[in-house]
Figure 1 (cartoon, rainbow, N blue to C red):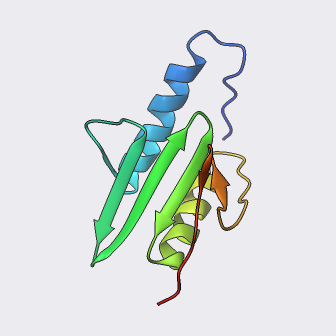
Figure 2 (cartoon, rainbow, N blue to C red):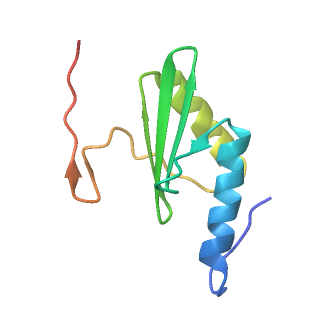
Figure 3 (cartoon, rainbow, N blue to C red):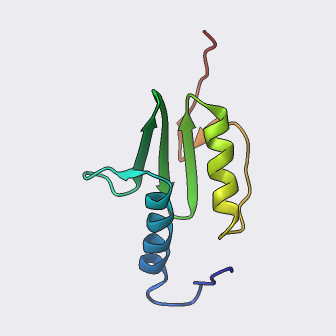
Length: 98
């Protein structure tokens, strides 16, 4: 089931409640200081999720966890994965191999 929220005055609030409930179902904890930052730490692996309007940045030390979360999000939303992040809201990302 897809939900359309555009052109509604309460759309931003409804969007946040919907996406926040999905993150909660996936075991994510909302950071109390920034409600757009969610995290999940399981078996020593972490996933950090940053929500900016309708963009989601996923950061993890485990690629499989990101893929699983993307599949879960596809169940309720039309999403597009843009691959590895190089630039996000003016922040440049650098990657280092160990």
